[in-house]
Length: 394
Image (tube, rainbow, N blue to C red; front, side):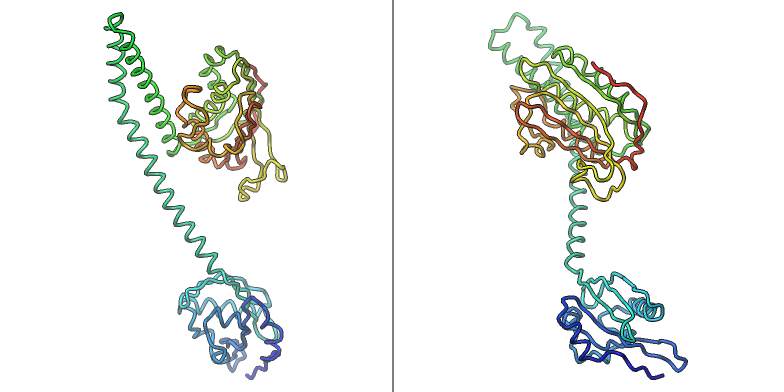
């Protein structure tokens, strides 16, 4: 059966040569029964010739079934897609890897001019960038896993010798009480203080490494978690004269211990970094962020449902906003140890737990104006549900 195309080379050149996208028109071939058996690459613009690295003189000779820039396995798939577009009139879209020329493209096929017009969008650079990013992410995950394992093992192994240092220094202080000179007593006190700081650091490192380990989710009432946190911090609350107000919070599917670590660090920081002579005031409140809420700006677009925001606000010393990211890094401190005790790991634990939940934590502050830490959690994936609970003040 003879087929006369409705498009000639001059028309094709006039329409498509100026286009930056790659275009190629394919003419169908028929058997004696009138069925389409193959297609010929009839016309192509400069962009497609450059992409496929083929001279224009070859067009009109090459068939899809013997395409040199496609692997043998791919030729059948491509021929089926072109035939489907020609016979049904539908636009067929596919992502292809041209192994013989090492190029990637998104390909659109549409019936046009008595044949099939194919548009090829070069995605080689994009695909390679994604592949490189994926490989780097895997390397980073492997490195982080090794570092977390090292932190856990090292911290665990350091506990026993540190315990002996603390025990022996305490025994020395007891047995030599009243027998040491003031300078020697000072040295012994510094030893005990250093051992205490080391113990807190090791404990925090263990908590940080555990925050990255696999957990089994359970239904957790955040109101109950906050009550446990406030009980643990009761001494600090009484000592500073703090007032802590907790609004109704939801329940969710997560690890209760990790959530307690998260809120203990957030509320503990709010109590610690208070202004001299001013009693701390801390509030914890939650709210739903539906799609379109301005507070969702910067959140992952992959989460299309609601987010839940929990704010921890205080009236403390605050900090400059330029440090709002740095404070979540391990061992990062904005104040000297002489001013405020701590290992510099607490907020890193907060971020680690938030990330494990698929959430985000961010901070906003001004010096002398207090700080707000906002924990944002995806509602659907964590099964977040409201719980009937009254606000509490402690």
